[in-house]
Every structure is written in structure tokens, then in C-alpha cells.
Image (cartoon, rainbow, N blue to C red; front, side, top):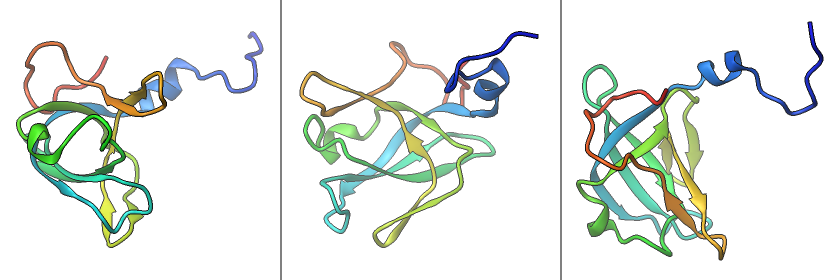
Length: 117
């Protein structure tokens, strides 16, 4: 058995995360959030259905431009209270050179609910 460095994740840790693709079916400004954000309704299809998320993505996206866009999200975290809403999934993104969030998405259309491997 080998030691792992502090903060190192195992494959078992990764497999605990359920990261899926969904399509944004509704989006609106979220002025009640502490930082500028957009409220998203993301359809993951099948058993997961539509879930809500709050995302601090206002630098690069408008609500109208997000409709129909596929995104990646962690779907098995517990809901988190953000202002007056429960965010049910964590929408994934990376920081650009200015620290603003750019959404993660597949580079071609895949079925909603598809799991990240």
C-alpha cells in the first residue's frame, strides 16, 4: 500500500461524483444572489428530470443565450440554499484569464443525462 499526498483524490473519490450533461431549458437573472448570477433550470432527462442551479456566469452569458445549451453539472450534491432558491446541482465551469467563469460542455450534442467518464 502506498501513501498518497494530502489532497490527493483516489479513483474511488472520483467515482462518487455523478457528473451529467443536461440542457438549459430556462434561465433568468438572479438579483437576489450575493454576487451576480443566473438562475438555471437544466433538463437531465429520464429519472433526474429538470433541476435548478445558480451560476455566477454573468460575464460571458445572458439568460437568453443559455437556452438550449448543454452543460455539465454534479447532480449528487445535497441542495444548497442560495438566496430564496435551493440550488439542486453544481453547474461546472473553469476560470478564464480574468477569473470569470466559462461553462463546461461537450463539444458535440450528447443525450441529456449522459454521465461523465
